[in-house]
Image 1 (cartoon, rainbow, N blue to C red):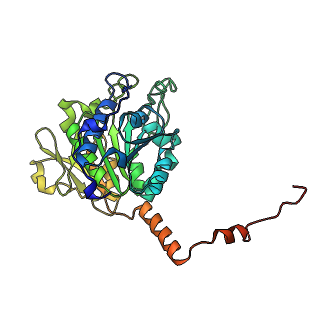
Image 2: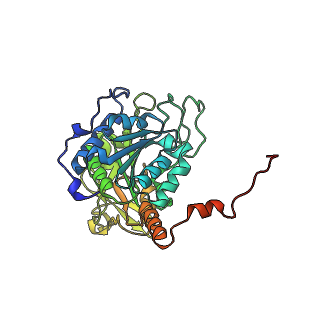
Image 3: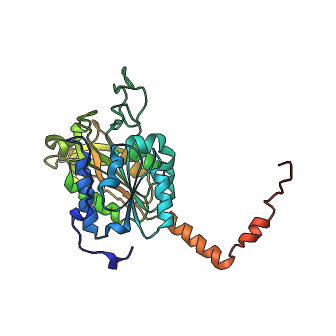
Length: 342
């Protein structure tokens, strides 16, 4: 995509004539609005964007974004998106998926998309439940979660999506909460500008089947103390009064209070989103309540070879040096004769 293709757009340019059919109060409405604003801000017209989705409430996205759209099958959005990007490298490709769609039946496609570093943006809606199928536990549901499919409590250890992503060598990993429009705008802008697979986990509230799943982080009165906004090159300081910080003791994050024991903001861990070593990004991904504030913003953003660039480069090289002879391939050793007996 070239800069000369960028034009002045408004969020309404990415709205469609389809009725938005999510439950009233669903966090998906806020995410849709945030994505429409982000697409408009980057100035890339809808006919140069493709939205790919699997199955789930999040996967209604292609109907509500005025772009090319594919509503595919359960867990397969990453595979279809890879094909779209390889076939049409000029398109900006977005994937809308959920914690069940991406991490259960789609888990294999998900990790391979990340390790390959296909140039696409992944919006992973995480409401810790299966919403479309009416409230079964998902791969991110907490241990002991009582649902229709686990009436005595889930015995599964939940996935941490960002830890899985960093373990798969994801080049761009970020997170925000559906109700935090400011952080969401910044994260989506960074994801849109990134070359490679940009994974954005979005904590999303399902007010019908898992209402309040993220209240311990999302409510305004607790958000400043229970989350920490990561900013590249800046110390990790948080709290309503900006009086707490995170420092590293060896490879262990530790919360401290500024002013105590002679420690100040200068002693805090300086966030380096561009660190090529994923160790610290993995530590951040595993920071969770109640011991730590939950990181928001961009955890990791590093340059890596982009899969689709490599594929097309290899194709050009092979074609230039040794164009394959299709007839010779058909007549070669890998053929056989079928007799009258079949």
